[in-house]
Length: 115
Length: 116
Picture 1 (cartoon, one colour):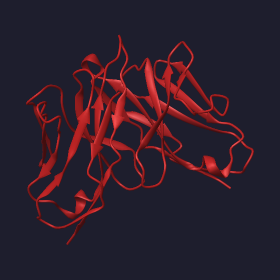
Picture 2 (tube, each protein chain N blue to C red; picture 1 turned 90 degrees about the vertical axis):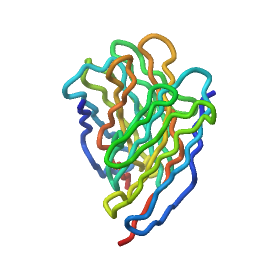
Picture 3 (cartoon, rainbow over the protein chains, first blue to last red; picture 1 turned 60 degrees about the vertical axis):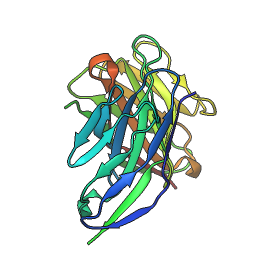
Picture 4 (cartoon, rainbow over the protein chains, first blue to last red; picture 1 turned 60 degrees about the horizontal axis):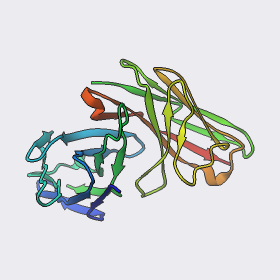
C-alpha cells in the first residue's frame, strides 16, 4: 500500500534559519505529492504540490522537488519566519479508479520558529 | 481557489447526545468528500469517504452506526456523531477533491468536538 514517512519533530529554528523537512513515500502508481500546513486550531491548507517526477512545487518561499529516483519530496525554505510556525504534513494522492481520490498523510512535523 | 466550509468550528455537547457537523463546497461540486479525525499531536486518520447518492465507505475500525455520514447534495456532506462519549472528543476535518483529475483537495477549517 501507499505510505508517507516524514521526519519527526518538533523542529525548533531561529528566525532566518534554513529549513528542511524530509519526506519519503511508497506508492504503487504515479502519485501526486503535496505539502499541507496546519496552523493552530485550523484545518489544513495546501502549501505546494507536484504532480510528476522532477516537478518543483513552490509557494511563500517554500520549495519541494518530486524526486522519483529517491522517492522523496523534501520541503525547504531558505529563511524561516516566526509566522511559519505550524505543523507541516507531507501527503500523496493515489487516484484509484475513475473519480476516486484519496490522500495518504505523513504524521506531521511541528515547526517552531523563535525570534 | 476552491473553498470548503465546515460548521461548526467548535462544539461542546453532553455525553449521550448527537452532534452534526456540516461540510460544504462553496464554489464547486463534490461527488466525493472525505472525513478525517485528528488526535492531539497526531496525523489525520481517514474515517470515511462520503459519496453523493450512495452510501459512505468507512475505513476499517470506524463504527458506521456511530459516525453517520450523509451526502445530501453535490455541495453538502454531514457527519453525525451519535450518542457521543468523551472518547469521541477530537478534531474532525472534511475535505473535497477538485481540480483537473481530482488532483487537489481542499479542507474545511475543522470542528473541535468536546464531549463532557
